[in-house]
Length: 84
Image 1 (cartoon, rainbow, N blue to C red):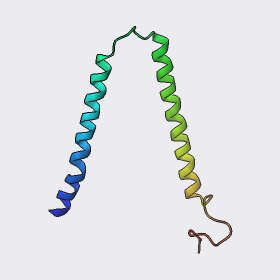
Image 2 (cartoon, helix red, strand yellow; image 1 turned 90 degrees about the vertical axis):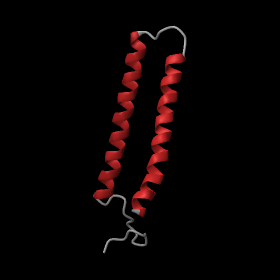
Image 3 (tube, one colour; image 1 turned 30 degrees about the horizontal axis):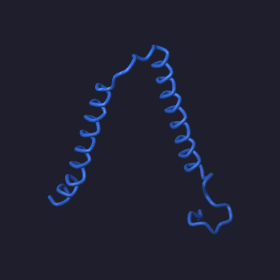
């Protein structure tokens, strides 16, 4: 029972912060005034998001690959992750 309460004490404030940030983002997005963006701006924004996700996922895949195949191990033998 105490473990559940501890988890709730961490999860409930985080969910409240998420809800508040989403509300603020929607409020600001709908209250902004100015000329509408042309279609190429939306295409450029989408392309930038997709490119960033591809680069981020590729780098994380390389990190996991090098970690799993031992490329991150120390070769001198005096490191904390020495193989035995």
